[in-house]
Image 1 (cartoon, helix red, strand yellow):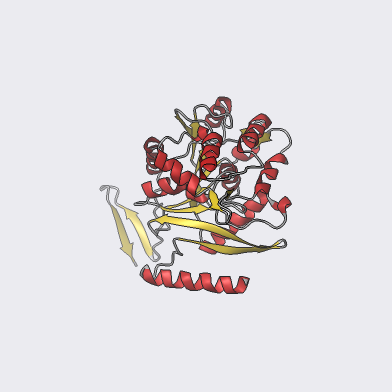
Image 2 (cartoon, one colour; image 1 turned 90 degrees about the horizontal axis):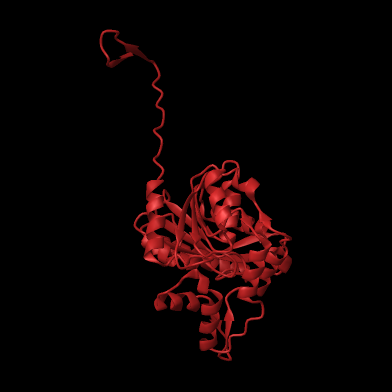
Length: 336
């Protein structure tokens, strides 16, 4: 079955490439197989925007969420950026791990390495919420990191154990959604801190977060076992040593009422390591949903302000000697 699925995905990718005028970029959405000693898991992604590889933004979600949460941001910057929303294992369109103990930051790092290899990516800008931001810091701290710029959405190198426990408690572990009404109530209660106001945004958020079952009930899109990964964190999460190794530009987004990214941690992030720029959003906590126009504009503006200008390549001219006339300021080139 795996071989058949791989052949089908490859064929679809080929025909989409042809329809796009021979572009080397892959399909607008899809899955790819990641194989290791624990077997094979299919990992999902979605694409938006220009097919240019020069401005490539990787969006990595937090626990219980998915890559399509970044749809509004991707559409907002589509004229200049190609955006990939990645589904971590156990979330969204990605498969669930057979070995539940394998849900970990290390596993997610390997999976993202697999995505970059599959897509032929060598350099990226990165935006991550919660888990996605933690992974982003780990990637950015690598020697010869592929991360050019890093945006951390309401997450930093220090998270108290109390904040993690509150998150787990708010999300719940045994969620029963008997009908659509109960699903709407659950999500608006569990994710109220995201600051979503527009009902259309709520509708999109909830629709992509649930699966309809044959009996008319609804299930969550993620593997409940992913929460066990957070339960394995003993004490506070402290990644200051990782953060201080980051050399690329960093933007920190913070919900004003967040308990996940404290004011003290955000302030310290501005003073140490990459000395991040900080933007706070009113009327939300953990984590800003990135659907509000002001939030989208802030991200777009920062990306424009920190846009990388390609360095001029040094040109070596053989058999030429540069001679400067002492009486004139111009440079003359004498060719033997």
